[in-house]
Image (tube, rainbow, N blue to C red):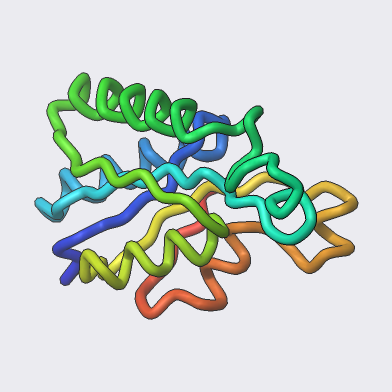
Length: 141
């Protein structure tokens, strides 16, 4: 396999934990560089313009920094280190952008059963990543 860099999206959910485990297994197997990101979703439109700020206070960058620290601990326990890259924006767009920035050959993301709203609005982060990525995508269930 020619995977030299693997990027994984992580957010402390069970699917993301499974994705991190799978990415760690693969990185170890092929001696790849591992980059872990956690994306704070940006608010757009009315919410942001009404002074709420660029992100939901209930889903702050500090929480995503803590998630990355937790991911690093899980990886260190497996004998792996990773580059941690927090991001702000649309999660799928940010993951694809970071994969391009780091020259990743593989993106690993978790997935869960989409909510009714997600189905109505057109899908999940993992689906959007798989549609827009310029490299292989592994969706972990």
